[in-house]
Image (cartoon, rainbow, N blue to C red; front, side):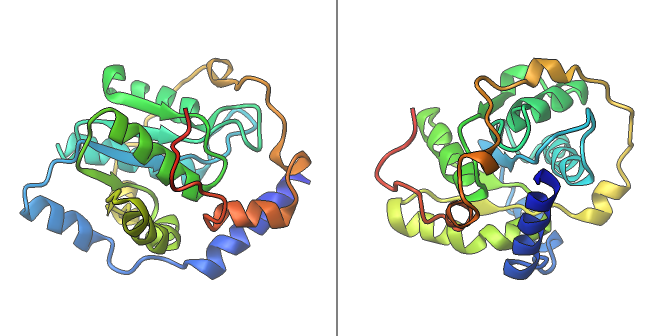
Length: 219
């Protein structure tokens, strides 16, 4: 059932987004403008079988690249224990620490269940921390799917989030060390598979941002 759910979510991502065109232009624009973000938002990916998927690797390695380029001061990983018992944000944090990113510059949102919530809830965290310049740093496929939501969020409540999509060719050239983590440190509290608590239609509404309460940030 879980594999089938991932398949459906993959299809949704494919048909609703495709790949954002020329992701490198966003990086170049930020570099030429001398932009240094207060934080980048990195949405989670389900973790199972004690190994990280290629998609999670892409997102975390891209976060590492952005950090090492001096383009951000902090990183916000987002994602709870949604499809597996592991909290996605905690898994990504463990890998980021292994990569050498200081723990004090890593923040987490463990409440988000859907990609739109990843962005909105992380923006709430950024606002509470006084971060003003924030960017979404995900893979180019998810970035395209969230582009419209990011614009809508700014219209709704003034939260601005720039786009800094991952460049696949750049990530491919990065060293692929065999990072070792202890996944047991990322097991979520009171995990219940979302497929057992929400219908597919309800989950799709979440993915499309139709369940966002624009007037309230989660506590």
